[in-house]
Image 1 (tube, one colour):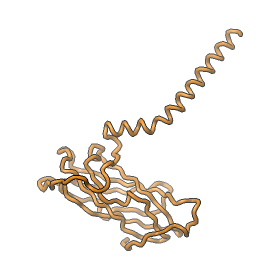
Image 2: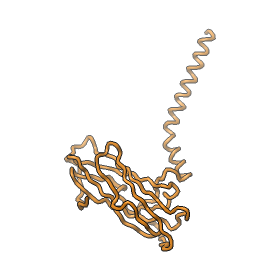
Image 3: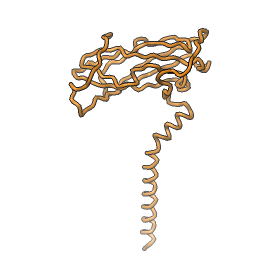
Length: 192
């Protein structure tokens, strides 16, 4: 084998090894990202959801502004907005609000809301007890609905945080394989 063929073979082996390593790294990115977020508290991922497992005292000397945002994924035609754009709460105080959804299309649809919290340091201190984001939300064609949110800001929230922004991104997850008329839609009150 001449020297040119040897260099080509060596280059080919290096390129194949690099391709295999990049492919493997691509599969590891999601678990590595989750570990990174858990360790640093970045990304505003909410982990405190569901029923509270301990008692919290209400800190009536302190007020936290909680701002609400709603964003639709580009393929989602629904209208989603918070009932209130901002609420002032005392840490430890259970608070209820809602997001208002409207399906302006002529077909039944199913949506899923994905929450995010800013600043990310506040995410461990925001406890969502009841949230429309816990479940898929079906809406019939033209239906309007108030979707509830019950939350509490932990009384251990660091003192330098005075404003928390809770944002929801709404995604269309309507099953493409099922007939549109086959989507079960729960009854709801009309509020929009």
